[in-house]
Length: 367
Picture 1 (cartoon, one colour):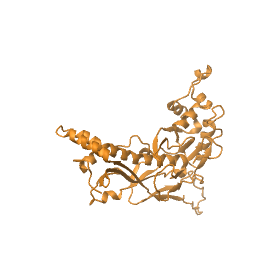
Picture 2: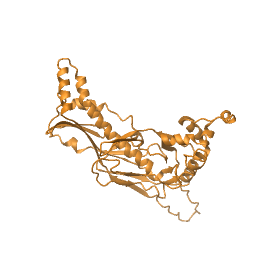
Picture 3: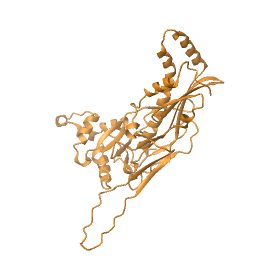
Picture 4: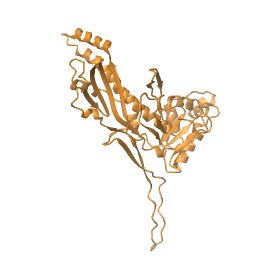
C-alpha cells in the first residue's frame, strides 16, 4: 500500500468532498434511522405490548391477583462488513497525468478533484445502495439471505429470518390475486382482515408499504377504482386509475381501516453479478405488502470500521456518518484504489408487530 497518486490530494480535501454526500435518494435512513453502537452485535429490545389489560374488580379486604409481565423479546445478530472497491488502472492514470499537465498554471483545481471524486462518489453510493437493499428486502420478505445471485464474493454465515409466523405477527395472503382486477378485493378483504386481526392483538396498523408495481396492480383493481371514483364518475360508468393521494384520501375515510395509509417504495438498485453483468431491481419485492404500526421500523446500527484507526498507513481515510472512504495506491501493478467500507445493519425492531401480505397467492410464496 502506497500513498495516493492523486497529486495534491490531502485528507482535508477528501473530507470536504465526502462531507458533501448525503442519503436523500434512499429510504433506509427514514425507515431505519442511523444509530451508532459500540460493538459488532446489534441488539434491539422490544416489549411486546398486546391489548391494554383491564384491572380486576376486587372486593375490599381480598388480595389483588398478580398480572403477568409482558415478554421482553431480544432481536440480535452480527453487524456485517460492507465494502466496495474501485480501481484506476494505468490507462486511466495516464489520462489523469495528461489532465494534470493541462491544468498546470490555470488553477483549475476543480477538474482535478472531479477526476478522483467520481470514485469516492461511486463508493459512497455503493455502500448506501447495499444497506438500502438489505433494509427493503428484509421488510418485504421477512428474511435476509445472501447468495451468489445477490452478492459477489465470500460471505460469512448470514441467514436472517424474522420468523413472522410467530404469535405476534404473520404472513397473510390475498383473498384473490391482485393481478385479477375484477375479482381482487384488496380493501374490503385483504387490508380490512389484516387490520382487524392485528387490532385483536393490540397492534394498530397505520402504514401499508408496497413497491410501485404492486401499487399499480392495487390501483387498477375494480374495487379500488370504484371506491376512489367520485359519485358522478360512477353514475356515468366512467373509470380511472387513482393516484396515491386519491387512494390515501379514500382509505382515510374508511372506518374499519382506522386511518391506514399507503407508502409506495419507488427504488432501483443495481447489483453486479460474478460474471460482470448487472441487474436492476427494486429490493422491495413485487406482490408484497408490509403493514406496520409506525413509519419508523428500527435503526441502522453501525460501528466505525477498523480502517479509521490505522493511522500509521499511507492510505487516506475519512468518515461521513457510517461510511469510511479510503484511498491509496499500489505499485505492482500501478493502480489508484478507492474503497467504501461500513459496518452497518438495518435492524427491524418492529418485525414482531408487523404483517406481510402476499397479493398473488393463497399461500405465502415470496422469498
